[in-house]
Length: 285
Image 1 (cartoon, rainbow, N blue to C red):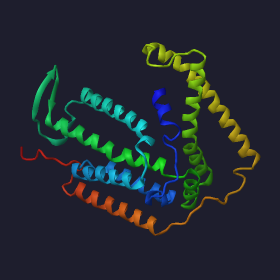
Image 2 (cartoon, rainbow, N blue to C red):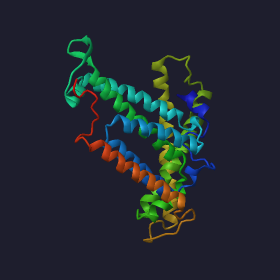
Image 3 (cartoon, one colour):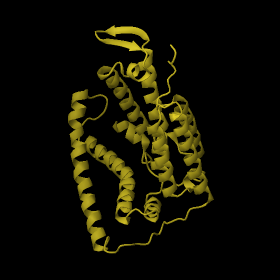
Image 4 (cartoon, rainbow, N blue to C red):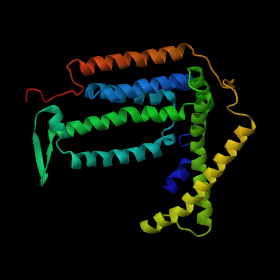
């Protein structure tokens, strides 16, 4: 993990100013679009809708000009979690697809009560598509949104400025934690603590505590310093505040929100036109 983080330098999940249509949108627009996109993915299990969302999300990533290395580590981590999730679903509910699609087509018997069915494969395929439809857009939101401008946009649409500022600090703190993790790991390795691939797995896990504990304490110290600084500046004393990074909605913002609203409505119509959230290709079999 250390090697991966070192290669990522300090750009992983960090906002970078890029001249792209996505970056020009206000933070509030991006949040509204993310919510609509997530709702679309949560409501449907239609394979065609998922397929369109996956393709559309790839196009949006391409338009944003965001480099893959900015999101690659988190993406790989989520993909590992997705694999574990699919295995767990099959172990604890091997016939969930059969219950949903009301048919059963055995592919091959594995062992004991476990038989792989076409319905289960199709169900878990849809779950995988659901992840792939949401994850790229969520990661893009994090790397294409200026934390300060996002906080100002949230406050503009009615979110309390204290909450908005907390969100901005959280987004801004991600690259700081990453860099501090790398710095501490270098310091510990200089003291002779082996975290390389040469050490066995148990030793690496044990030695990782020498990085995590200083990271936790340094994070707590950073939180205390920020809290003291905000208190000295009377943060939260007034009901309203002004924002240096505030931006007004422009034509592109209204177009982006309109596209997502239309997509949401179309997906709902397609999803529930047959009275079910699930597209069933096994009808009549």
